Length: 157
Image 1 (cartoon, rainbow, N blue to C red):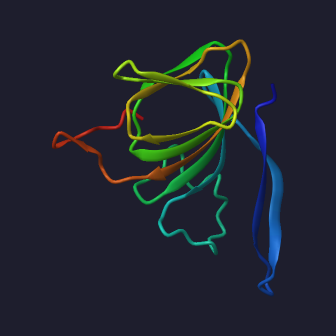
Image 2: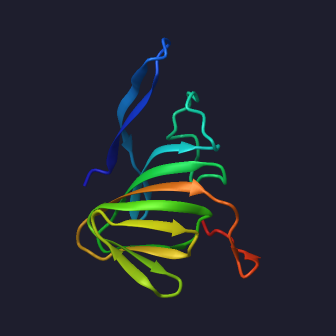
C-alpha cells in the first residue's frame, strides 16, 4: 500500500477570485504501526483563511487548545497502536478496512467503512484486527483541560 493522500487547497488570487492554490500528494510519516498524512492544521480559533502558511506544517504533532489537525491514517494489518489519551475531540471515519477502539475500561467497538467515532479525551487503543490495511480520516480539535471527578486528566500524547 502506498501511504500518501492527495490534497487540494483553495484560496484567493490577487483579484479576490477563488482559486486552487495547490494540488499535490502529501507523503505520510511513520507512527508505528500506522502511517499518517497530516493534511492540514491550524493553531488558532477562529482560524485565519488569509494565512499563507502551509497547513500541513503549522503544527508538529497534535493541535493546541485553540487549534485543529486533519489526518489520513493507514493502520497496518494485525496491529495495535498503544493506549493513549489526547486533549482533543477527534472526529474519525473509517474509509476502508476495520478499526477497533479499545477503551481503558475494557470496552471495545469495531468500526467498519462509513462508521464514525467521536473520541472525547478517552484513554484508548487502536487495533486493526484484520489481515488488510485500514484507512481512516481524523479531524482533531483542541479542547479545554478534561476534569474527571474534579481532577485534571493528563494527556499521554
